[in-house]
Length: 502
Picture 1 (cartoon, rainbow, N blue to C red):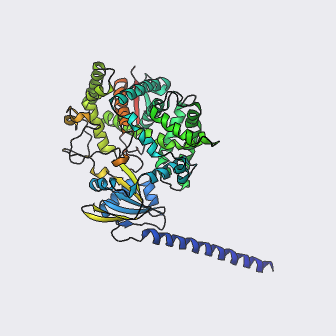
Picture 2: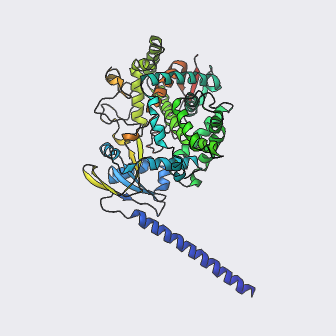
Picture 3: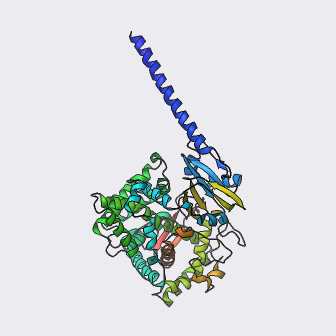
């Protein structure tokens, strides 16, 4: 009898497993059929594995995946990524067309990304709060215009000097071996946060540990925002939770007195939205993780690449940069904008770094089935409701140049940055060039003026007050096209020696 029962249990168990596997395979087949059947006029589709699609390549080798698909299909193509349909538009003329399409909306992506980054609410709950990306955008005027920029520069310079005083590694007058990404990260994380959130930013917090936790969160941040499975982003989520509890929540509870109006007004709207929620402060802190990511990551990475490139460049470039920055500071120490205009070499270095390490991207969600004319050389291209659209202008950026396109030439743009008329612009480049590190259309990054202000102030400060030496056998991390941020994230450590010069 026992043998019979055992045999029956084995048959039942095998039967259950078989049925379960059949169900899984059926669901995968259904998902593949639903997502991978290409309709008329839609972009070429590379479906990959059932449901998973190109998910693992997307995470592990995005650069290689984009290069392969662009070579195979041309500038517009579609992939499946863990059940999501994603279109990539990679030529600038098509990108400009997409920016003007009413059927392509950024708000849906913004709510999804913010919900995923916060980890506490759904997109519908965020919408119901009545506070979203549009609220941030309406305060953008406080971060541009001459008077606003001069005031913001004063705040940031003060925060930068406070940063150097508070963090031992930043005011060590002896030669010290550091990880350059960690060094640049600490500078921006403290100075940008303090100038925007006020004096309570990182108050009573281990600054170096907070910066380390942020760097962990930053690596997984884009995957978290994109809604990738949580088992792939566990480390980033734990780091995010640390930041919410130890960095952002104390600021929300203490208040942003002394913070920049851009942040103060936004937090005030969130406070009003959550005034009857007993967990309101925590939810606000969690919602701010996306904003903190936007404020910090691109500038941290840009500072890394500018320092790395100038350290590795010929000695004459470093000497001329130091001379230029000192003269600009002495000639008009109170005017940020005037100093910027008097630093054409630094402006050229920054533009050249953008050229080599910028992967400008912006995102849209298709609101309704539609056809867009004139894409990819005049084609009519169809898109279906609910699909994600990624606009990646890396491939067209600052391409029409003389000389070695793969080499860093810090003086390449100086004829344009020295031109008084062109130099009035945000990024002084000739009209025939494309440089879009802050997206475009009506959803252009509202913090772009602050980001460049940080870049000019920090680099000028570092050039004057630090000496950098490349370590033997150390080299520049390779460039990889990334979807994670408009500026490349270095994919490995780069150690340098640095010492502070008061």
